Image (cartoon, rainbow, N blue to C red; front, side):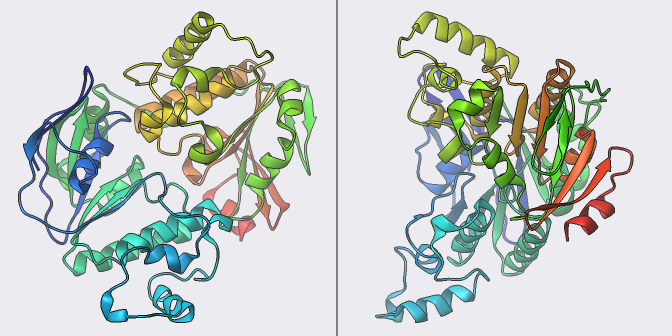
Length: 432
């Protein structure tokens, strides 16, 4: 890709960006939310046209988007081969199609995709792209909903694809993934490529500095608990005012279901000071066709009468608190980058001033600088007496930010650890 530029109205999203993709390598595309990564890969995939620049050479490009593009009412097998079954297959029965699907994924090929957990849906999306035998595969936050075991399976697949000569463009905000699989790294900041180097030449501190334009000294901010005496009794444990309790467990262990149970009657829950940030912002977190302002102020609305000026002022205040990057608060939420959508979903609930905040993967798709801001906000909210239940598939995040860890297994609490007691080994042993 040569000198790629793109504008949306007055906003210059990409400016003279170069990107080279070689066979048999993982090219890491790094940058903060809103830096232009998603726009660049959409141009590479041909779903968006550049205003300036050109793409040299040609190759079949498959993209695993951060937001899934599956048909929820169809089976796993039907989604894998939708619209592209080779003519040489001729007429193929459902059982034969299922057999083909099993070559790429170990999920029941007859299962309806919409009935699967989000992590399994993510695996279907990955298998769908890999089964195309594309020469270039773009993976946009592919591990955001995967368990540790599934991440290892993905990395094994990536190694196989590299051996086949596939060029992989990989986007992630997880530093441990970058350090593990990247061969080369291109950094975007404010729509420009500010660096492109072999991965060993970009140590973590330098990479973060290039991404955010400033020094970020600590991955997790220091935390001084301010736990109050007031207690909330939940299923099998209590949470105190001002306490952050991490919920750990394997996929399907019941942590997310616990949060949904606590929020099963939304109007009643909101009136009692409970707020729930779900793990799937696209379907349950936001109304993507509505403006940023409308999404920010919709939770807890008590009147059908609207005050546009007051709503905009409130949305502006929330946007500044969360450092939201948006060309306009009037734009549709669906036009934002995934990370900025997550910030809008969080802003919506903070507006309700909850006493119990349920956070299911709050930093999913959030860049390293924004993660620090979210962590600092969590510390501030807890100091104000807000009790927080936190789910995260990133175990270092869970261990660093939680005052206690509650481990769930098969819908039940299997262990409880204090911050000092909790280790990755203890948590995983209790979860399995």
